[in-house]
Structures are given as C-alpha cells and as structure tokens.
Length: 296
Image (tube, rainbow, N blue to C red):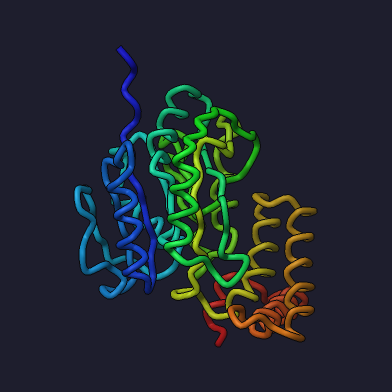
C-alpha cells in the first residue's frame, strides 16, 4: 500500500482582483489532485468573486489588509489541520499537476520543507501577461507532462507559488513589520526554516505569474520598501548583506535610469522618490518598513 500523501491547504491573499481570483479557483478545481481546502483572504468584501469555486472546500475570510497580514490570517484559519500549506498569488496560473506533484515530492523526500516551482513567464517584470496567453502557455507545458524529479537545492521560495511541509513552518508567521506589499516577505519566511529542512525549486512544477497591475501598492510605497525592507532583513539576518546591497542598489539605479523615460505600466518616478526617502531615513536613523504606509 502506498503511503498517504499529506493533506493540503491552499492560501490565497487577494486585494481588488475578484475576477482573477475566480480564475485561480477554477484552476484549483481542475487540479489532478485537488487541495483539501482553499482559504481566500481578502481585505474588503469586494475582493471575493461573485461565483465561489465549484467542487472546492473553500473559506472566504475578511482579514487585515496587506500581503503578509492576509497570509498570516490564512495560516491562523488553517491551524495544524493540514500536512502541507501552499501559497499562490491570486494572479498565478498553476499547472494542473502542481498539487499532485508537490505532495508526491514531500512524500518521496522527507527532508524537503519548502518547494517553489518554475515560473514559465513573469508579468511582474513587464506590462503583465494576459490570462488567456498564460493559460495557453501552461496548458502547452502540461500537455508535454515533463515529469522529471529534478530539484535545485538552496533556492528560497518565490511567493507567487510556494509550498511548505507543515512540520517545517509550524509556529512560523510572515513578518508583520513588512506592511502592504511586503517586499521580500517570501524570502524572509523561507530563510527562517530550520537548517535541517531543504528548500528546493522543482522542475516538475510550473506556472505563469500574470503580474496583474490592479491591487498593487503605490510606486512611492514600493520604492521605500525596496530599500527599507532590504536593510531591515539584512539586519535581521535573513538576507545576506552582499545580496541585499546588490538588490537595493540595483533597484535604485534602475528606477533612476528608467525615470527619464518611464514605462507606462510602472511608476518609476514614484519608486525613485520612495527609494530616496528611505535612504534619507536610513541616514537619520528613522528608517522603518512600516513608515512606507504613511507615504503618499
């Protein structure tokens, strides 16, 4: 008899994207191994789809506003009832094999605590990806199946699609000092797993991140977080200093350069302003990630 695979809860934090959430619920209902429960945590009643997911055990919960806060609210709802927890961004289009292969990996590899899948395309780096195009891309890859068991070790999870063995995250919560968009919350969360747990990127899991622009935080707030959150996490010890410095400097340089001719889909000048405010605050000892939410 094959060992029973762990029960799985999916947590989705969403803000201002009811139609996209509805699409994700459809993808979850079509999984070859359906999740045992789905928790959709919104910040307002308008965040929930008009048509709840069919053939899913789903809870729609009105929680606190902010990615990390909403994910923590979802963890509170899930409690210790599930053997594994998966976080999908509301604008992620997962392979229909995602849950099945994730649970199979946990079953085969008892030392794996965190799994993230391949992102075939990431709209966050551009104007965004249309849902129909993303679905076509994912279904094309699904048709090829590609069931290889390869996994790259030492890769921190990417928040748009990440799954955890519950034993590896029992008692962990997302850092609530990273408010709003919570820049780098996924890296911080994954870094706090005990050293005995492996963190991997699995080639058997994939999907497309739409990078939807609705529901995003302001450019100024995000720009502040691009500097303040990185410095905070370096001081905390969950982000390597060299990597953090390179990331923050790269963001500032890119915002400065692109602000001369900004893209239509990114508030580069707002981000640059936020970067500069964070640098000023750091120089005068006033820098704190929550200060981002006070900016306009």
